Image 1: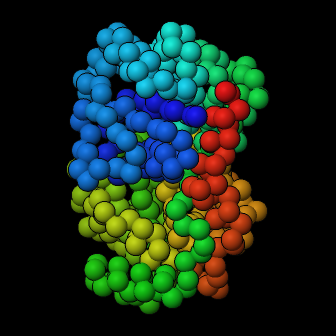
Image 2 (image 1 turned 90 degrees about the vertical axis):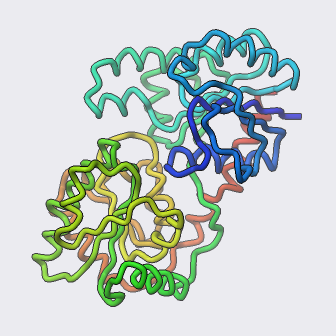
Length: 373
């Protein structure tokens, strides 16, 4: 029997960001197929209880990343539970996972949400090459590596020298198994427009993300300074709703001008994806899959994205619902956004849900784990 000890080094409950949801959702569906316990930090909020076994096992101070006591405590726990696999989110606890694998015989599985060293290089961090060495070191010693996009897997094969048989794409998914009806989308738009006192007959654009994260903030700048003003200049009456946490205070005044409106963090984010006529994804950095784009497409919302922002999403399964524009070509992005408002209403192809359903993803992950026994 597969017994998974999932080690998560940061707060994931409640799951608000795309990264937190990527962890909690996979664990929720995976726990329906295997015996799974998540060992997290003590700053998580466990009420209401998540749909998988969660133990606040580690401290939440910055020293948790280098605390040697974590090894001895976790080794004892793995031996007690007879865990067959150690699932490590990100490479940061690579040293811990490697030592646990050597000392317990449990198989180390490293789940990469993106190529971390490239993400920090795009943010201008000078130490990204040190991280690249450590990231490579960790992945090479894992029994199995989960990558969130084929692009990341290909990079790791080339630059980390990994065995292709040990590298599997386990993407971000959706609980939606069929496309939402057009009636459901119209009802959602009416509700959201009433909530924010907007004209429901005008095009509604949407942008979402953690807004202190540099790639997301650069995308927001493009929307405020270029995309929305250009749409207005084209004579398109519209509103761009922006949701997400951690908006820098310097942006508060900007959000009170033009057609861009800030909603703050919204707990019912699915309603906003469902309500939008067009989802904007002018993101060119950060690596990995953009979870917000998967969620927008799952809601049946036509989406416009730069190439980097669409990594991990096969365009051929999206019908006419995903328009991908060359990175940095802002004029083409604006044209695509404007043209999308005139697109005839249609459903997302069923192929999209067959590919991105969490059920299918969890099944693939389980089969990969089974292959290592």
